[in-house]
Image (cartoon, rainbow, N blue to C red; front, side):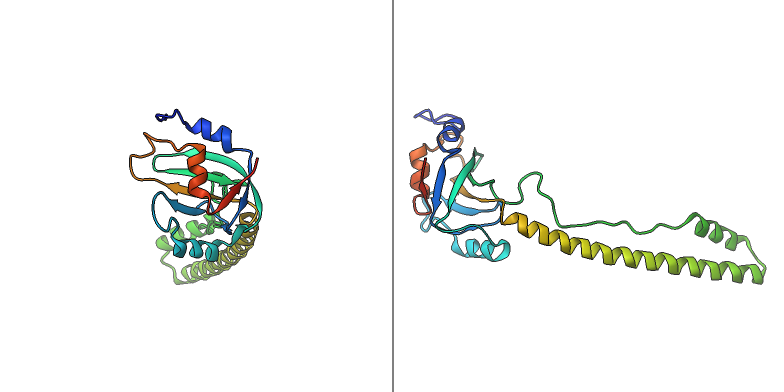
Length: 202
């Protein structure tokens, strides 16, 4: 993806990746990061920004130095990733935990078959009592698994919250539709777009 000036994603990577920047704002602990809109005033939707800070917490703080780890030019936006790019990138885990319910035992299946064929009240009563006993055992085990699942999810959420704060963040710079396929911004243009939010260091 070149431009009249010959700028490509590879050029931006060579220029920025591995450099440090000094942040002028707190960065949310998510890959959603901070959205910056080209030629919009203000360039940031601060309502959305504050919602992300509230929901995910702060990964990188105002006045903190951070490493530029990835630059990526996509169809409509440029990703300016810092210290890992934010939690939620490919490979990051989710908080959901699934413990399957206990299925019917072979014994229960067999008793149900026998009960359908049995006509004598005495064996039928014994079958029904055993079915009730097996049902109670199964329900207790499923309840235990549900409780365990909730405990594991709570534990995993705490672990993810900790990881979020260590996974960096990013600026997502958004351009008009059709702009980037023809015009990749130069390093100076990128810095101009982000000058309110970062100071560049080598």
